[in-house]
Image 1 (spheres, one colour):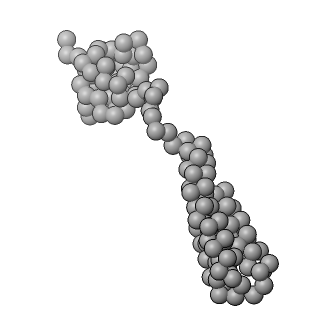
Image 2 (tube, rainbow, N blue to C red; image 1 turned 120 degrees about the vertical axis):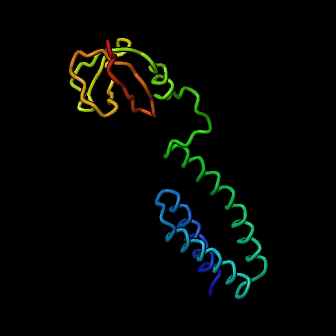
Length: 153
C-alpha cells in the first residue's frame, strides 16, 4: 500500500470519527476507528516506522480533542448542566398547601379543580364525591398530587 493511500485512509478514519459527533450511532465511529488503526498498522508494516510514529502521535493527540469537543457539544445539545441554579421545584410550592383550606370550584368525582390560597389547583378527593362550592382541606401532597377532604361543619 502506498504512503498516500495510508494517509488518505487515516484522514477518512478521523473524518468518520468526527462525523460521529454529529450523527451518533456508533457505526460510523467504529468504522472510522478501524480505518485509523488499519492505517497506523499499514504505515508500520509497509512504509516506515517514521510514518507509523507520526500517524500514531496524531491519533493519540486526536483522542482528547475528540472527547472535549464531544462533551461541549453534548452539554449544549442535551442541556446537561452541572448546576441547578434557578431551578424551581413544584414540590416546594405545593408543600405549602398542606392543611390549607379552600373551596371546590368544580365537583370532585374524585378529581377536579379547587381554589386554595387564591390559586386554582387540580385536586383529588380521598375517594368520595365532593360537590361544587364545598369547603375543603388539603390532607396530603404527593408530588403534584394534592389530596383533599371536605370540611365537616
